[in-house]
Image 1 (tube, rainbow, N blue to C red):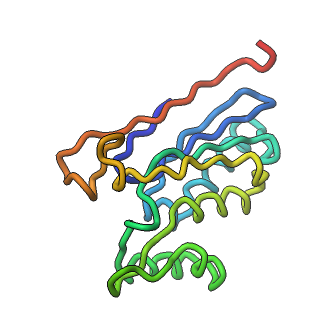
Image 2: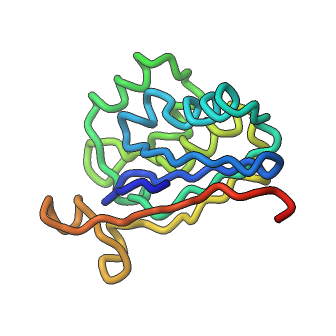
Length: 159
């Protein structure tokens, strides 16, 4: 299965015991609404996956140094019920008056909160907007830019 992104988080999850997988698209809206938690829960509900058996990869996406957002984005996270400690970790002051969002840390934290061991969460920490020669970026290159595709496939354990 695949997920297409241009700055949003491509998140791939695999169950080492069962060989089942999930692909999650998590822009700021998906991150605020707990898309990764829903992915973990879907694997558990559909296949009996245990969070402790999951491995997750956060692919290239926009990084916190350049991901400037409005106060409405921070408000969406507050409305979704995230506490002050999480907001302090995920939002930082920007160069101007608008906050910057760290989707790398937010999605990592949400995976860990869903029961995935921190050592089994792997984040590329590669910023799409900062490396236009390597990646497509809606923010840096505009709406007409290409898209990145992250792919994962199921397998038979032991095969």
